[in-house]
Structures are given as structure tokens and as C-alpha cells.
Image 1 (cartoon, rainbow, N blue to C red):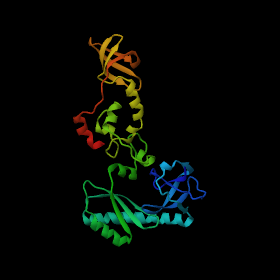
Image 2: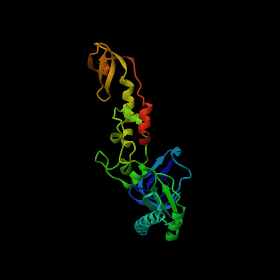
Image 3: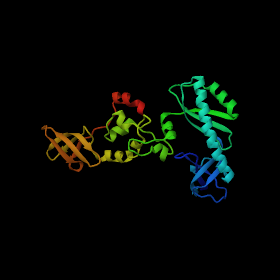
Image 4: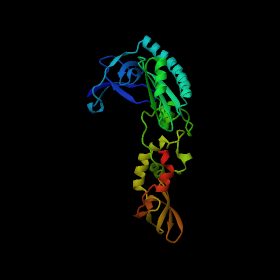
Length: 284
């Protein structure tokens, strides 16, 4: 077991482990740590705890110190520097006529690096832009092209549910979401109804998928052949949550029954056909 604290550098960002090195650190404190990007100031979101060695990426780096008033002042100064860097970068992008959209700018705590995040439909040759920015800021410049999900996470906003985006509110990492999930949950495969503001499948499809997977194991699927008290038939509709089935009998009569009152002769399989996959592939 290893003693660690959890530090986050962005709201709803990934949590990284560091060694408290005997310091009395509590949740809510700001600490100065050394990362792969340089020296950073982060928020302690997990207090001192013991975790299994397998969960720790060795070597575990120690925290340098708990942030001092001067450190916090540096953080505020960096925020102002970031605003200026954003403005200047947009001007330089326009000057070089680059087809890219600047999304966010970050500055490491030690001012050793400026990171510019952007989106673009294609690859962008930004070498001259980097030279221009380096001549202005006299520090290391890094440009990173990000996807539309990352853009939504950085910018934030309100989803169709009326709540702030999950990705910018609490999702530390994106989970894989597929068209098959939407189909298994009985949702309309209308792109407008199953995609978020970023234009990709809604992250919340993942939340209930485990429950639907279990329900599908015990519920006849649409197309299944079943035996009811009124005779044999084919399932035309299945409500996984209530367990109610609409069955068209061989006599052409339609009955509504509980899944517990039928015998499955041959179950069906939920598949996404090639046409559906081709039409919706860009949403994944």
C-alpha cells in the first residue's frame, strides 16, 4: 500500500496521485507539484489515503509545498496572462489565415510553457504561428489540436436536459459510447435526439447501459418467437423497464403480456445494420 493524495488541475479533470511526504494536506488545499508539463498548482480533491501499489504510476512524485499567498498571487497573474495570450493568438491566426479555431489557453504555474488548444477540420501547418507566439511571449509554446468533445468540455454550456454539460461538470475522462447502446436502450436513431451539443453521441447513454445489458438478458427482444397463454407469436415491442411485451400471435391477434408469462422459443439479437452504422458513424 502507498500513501497518496489526489490532485486535480482542471474542473472535472482527471485526478492524479502524489505523495504527501508527511505534510498535513486536506481536501480543498492548493498544492504546488511537478508534472510532465512543468510545475503546476492544483486542488487537492482526495485527502491522504492508502491505495494499492498497482494503482500508482511509479515513481510517485512528492508535492513540493502547500500553496503560499505568493503562489496564489502567481496563479491570478497567470490567468491575466492567459487572457492576453488568447487575444494575441487569435490575431496571429487571422494574420496567417489559418483555418483553425482557438478554444483555450493554459499557462503552467512556473510560466515555463503556454499551451494553446484549437480545433480544425484538417491538419494545420502552424509552424510560423508558433514562431510568432514564441517571439512575443519568450517562453515555450505548444499547440494541441483537440476534438469536439474536448472543446465542449473546455467551453461548457447547457445540455438538452437543461443541466450543465456532464463533461465540464464531473466527468474526469470520456467513456466510449456507441450506436449499439442507443439501439439496445430502444432510443430513436435520429441524430438530433441522441447527440449532444458537441455533435457526438450523448455521454449519458453510458450511465444506464449496464442496467439495460442485464435487462436484455432476461427480456425477450423484438423479433423473438415466444409462447403465450393465447398461443405462439412474435415480439413486436418490448419495454425493458416494465417488462411488458407486445406480441403478434400466429392468428394475427396482438396481445400485451408480461415477460414472466411467456416462454421463449427463439430469442432475437439486436444488431445495428450497415445502413444505420454508415449514417450515424460520425456520431461515435
